[in-house]
Structures are given as structure tokens and as C-alpha cells.
Image (tube, rainbow, N blue to C red):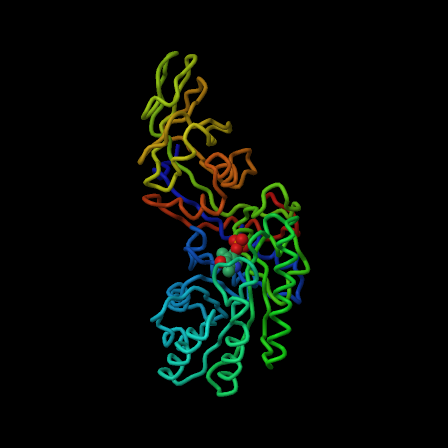
Length: 389
Ligand SMILES: *Cc1c(COP(=O)(O)O)cnc(C)c1O
């Protein structure tokens, strides 16, 4: 058998391109696509993921920090990039020089951006984020008049162009929650106020993946798709079948196989005890590789075409699975999670087993695992909505 890496992450860029195209077709050509590549593209590798998203026609990339935006520029990306999380003292001059669309939440931030513009000697692009009910970032409603007035004054002075007004949902993964209607109404109030003060932004946007798919009224001019671009459902069980394909596969080489007898306890704390004879497989990845310890005794992996339960606690470097009497050769492939198309577990299954969301599974996996980008070509010659290669 061919030699497998101890533990690796395989990222299929063709699946990413496919997902971006599926989402773009769904929202329609009047709505711009922003692929969100923050946090190293949710663990998929930011630069490679950004390149695939651009190839699939994504006009915008979204990141949290200015450092991420500058890293995209350093890697050669010259398209529109929005960043949205700053602290006082941020290097806005670098952001302006790199032609990044900057977000502002407050008059103080706008003043700092103006200083950056002064230093660089060219106008900025600024998007105003308004808080419509998430109570996280964004301008509080009481501050909208002051923020909008400062933004408009800066526009008139040639300091910047206000390219966007935007907000973010608290509960788009719970589409029945009335908070979604409320936030959309409040967002429309913000747009009306912006209009009154003479702002005419290029893009108005509110929707992340869940809202882009489940709430057509919230699509406005642009949607910000993160998790769905990576082929994972933001609202498991509530999504239509779009044929999205999970982009990341986490796999390992089986390190050893052994027999245990009834009464034998497995791993730290003896948290699982064999009731009957069985075989165990040792998987050489653990929480030091981002395999969540909270999936102990709960998650499953795929070995030899069958799902095998994790037994006992997940350790720093390794964990144990129940092979049910089978004796695969050491070195055989263990798929922790992947496309699910072969019957194996997905990141969503791991999330359910660990009491978290699939976002955290793919973003946290890594550590000592190596990451490899591949191109399966699954998006060539595939029609919309066809999920399997
Ligand atoms: C992370 C993020 C997104 C993407 O959300 P998904 O649910 O992954 O699509 C969109 N907008 C903002 C402001 C975000 O922080």
C-alpha cells in the first residue's frame, strides 16, 4: 500500500469552486458574491482558498482583520477585499495603500482612517457597519446619525468613498426566529437614514451563508458566504439540498491494531471498557492537532469503508477507535471527516459529537497535521446541484 502521511488535511479546491458557483447561481447575477476567507479560510488555507474563490467568480473576499487583507495583497490578490475588525492604532495607512475596503463602526474609527488617508495621500474605501440587533460590532443605533454625518463629510472632502453599508444577523441559522425579521427591518431603517444624509453606497449587505440560502429578502446587493463555500451547512437539517461538497478531508494513517478482552479499559481515566472481545485501532492525532477532546467516546471515523466509534478519551497526540474485530493493516487510511459521500463522517457529524458547530471543527483542526491542496476536477462538466464527483 502507498505510504500515507501520519495525519493530514486535504483541501479540494475544485469542491470550493463548485460551492462558490452553486451559491452564486442561487443568489442570482444581480447579487455580488463575497467569499469569506478569514481565519485561514476556516482552516482551509487562506491564499489557496481565495484563489479558488476568485477563479469561481467571487468578486469580493471578506476577512476579519486588516492583517488578513494585507496577506491577500501580498499573495497577489488585487480584487475587492473587505475587512471588518479593527482596534485603535490599526495601520490604516497600509490598508488604504493596499486599496482594501475598510469597515468603520464609529466616528473615532473614521477619524483614524482619515489620518491614514492623510499619510498615504490617496482616498480610502470605507464601509459603515451598523448594529441591527447582534449587539457585537457595528454602530449602535443612537450613533448612526453622527457616524453617517462624519462619513458623508469625509466623502465630500474627498477623504474616502463610502462603498458599503452593512450589518450581520444573530440568528440566521434559526430562520423562524422573529429576530431575523426585526434585524432586516432595522437594516432598512439604516439604509433610509443613509439615503437621507446623501450616502449612496455601492453595496448594501446583510446576509451570511444561512441567510443567503434561506432568506432571499436579505440578499440585497451582496452576500457574504463563509461556511457554505466550504461545503458545510450553517443550519444542519434546515438547508435545501444544494449539492454543496465539503472541501476539507482530515485523515490519518492507522498506527497500530490490537486485540482487547472483555473488561479491558481504554485510554485515560478508563472512560470506556470493552464488554466483549474486539479489536482497537490507534489513530495518531489528538487535541494537539485540533481533534476536539469533547468528541471522546462520541465521534466516528471511517476505516475500510466502515464507520468506527472513538473509544475512551481523545488524548493530545492520539486516540483509539473500535474496529469491531476487523484487523486492517497498520498504515491503512483513517478518515476523521470528509465529503461524507462515501458514507464516512463529516465535520458536521464531529460537531454533533463534540457539542459544537462545524465551523469550529474545520477552523480548529490543524496543529501538527500537514495540509495539502488538491484539485479533483469535480467541478468540470458538473451541472448545478450535482453533488457527487
Ligand atoms: C464570518 C462572517 C461571515 C460568514 O459567515 P458564514 O456563516 O460562515 O457564512 C459573514 N459576515 C461576517 C461579518 C462574519 O464575521
